[in-house]
Image 1 (cartoon, rainbow, N blue to C red):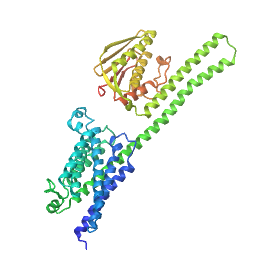
Image 2 (cartoon, helix red, strand yellow):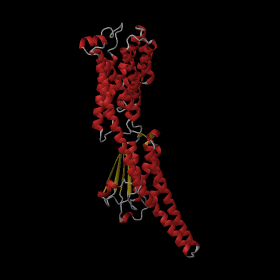
Image 3 (tube, rainbow, N blue to C red):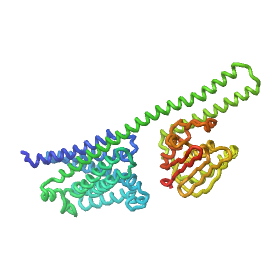
Image 4 (cartoon, helix red, strand yellow):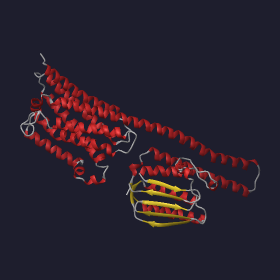
Length: 480
């Protein structure tokens, strides 16, 4: 006949396993695979830990319900599941610490913990510790205790600390405060879990297991440690599921925004491409309508050629802008000497400026190395210099300077009305003014500039007034 205490223990073991199983299933089958947050892309490690740990715990429940039924192989299966679960937990903690928490602060990358959490170093140390502790107490209890002391305790503890601070490394967003709260709750729960599951083990022959173990804990507090492990598991499950729901909300919001941008982009692109095509057709129609001399035909073909070049440039920029929006450019980043790229671009555009009668001058050029995609940086500088030359009248001056981490392109051009400054980065937007009627363009240059600066975390500021020139300021501080 079962006692009330036995029934409570059975319920605890079942709920303990169920909490982890629920967490694992939620993580593995509900995780947002395309979330920009690192946590969401690596949380499957936590899911495997949770499910394997749940089955390990249910084996304990089976053995508790059937104490007289002995399956020696089942004990080793349980130890194997325990080891597997904690290795995945350990790996998740390693990624959280090295790839998010410490990576968010360059100074911490030199920290001993960052170097120690390198895979080869930490796994060699943990495996050596595991085998040494098994040697001290070579029984099933000893194996389980060794797993908990090494992979279990340190994995849960370091993960708890990493999750507690992980929210601080996330970029600002609409739900950042809620995310931080859930990460801190999960972090605290994992820290307590590391104590209840990684320190308080079944009784063994060496310290601390010979003094602090599941039996002494129950005798002291009149509460099985599995109850507190289960409570921690439940808190972790709820907080993680809440965080995942935010990730899903964030992903849906991004998809909706992308859809609206694509609709707007397609509409504008269709309109912009129709204009030169209509001009081409009109010129061809007029040329075919009546006989002309050879020179008139030459003039018409030259005009058509200009329109085709204009159309090719537009299509090329449209494709580039689409490419920027649809692939992970950051994977192609390398160290780039910005001063060298700027000088190279300057020399290319100096002849264009000279032909127009605009004086292009470098005021100061200092060495600056940044981590970036070289081609995009060249496009960024080319678009800014091209714009400055286009809208600067003959006889005026453009000054370029690169000092410390700030690049300034200052022209004496026609300027931009202050109320239009916020719109100049929009795709296909062009400021309508009499001075700009003769300047060809399709309103994609500054749109690409904005996208490139966003990808590289470059701060851009434009200062301008109608008739008094424009100053573009690029701050590369986060890149240097």
